[in-house]
Length: 125
Image 1 (cartoon, helix red, strand yellow):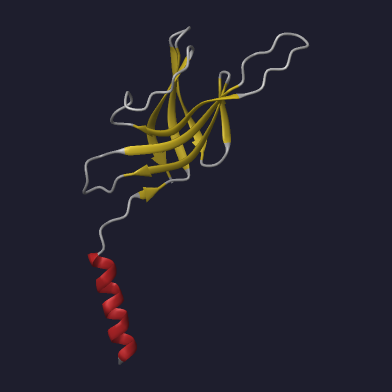
Image 2: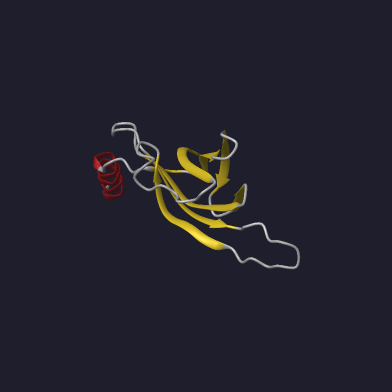
């Protein structure tokens, strides 16, 4: 009988907890090449680097708000630039941005790069 009561209390406690945000395994980002004016969406698997032009983007976390809250997608990214090197020259990558991108407010935490812009779009499971 005590096992049933414990199970009932556990189920009740879970039902009363606030909904946790949904964590995804893939971040959907939009990149804009400011030189050509070409924009495209691309997937960034969490923890794996992807390339967009000379940028290397690593999405570390992608979180969507629960349905009962105002819609918001937040993606934590690290962005590195790999400038094109001239012949017999080595150019190390440099960090361009590390932080959260917000889909509802792309200007809040913008990536400062002369050629590319990156925006948060969505999260996928």
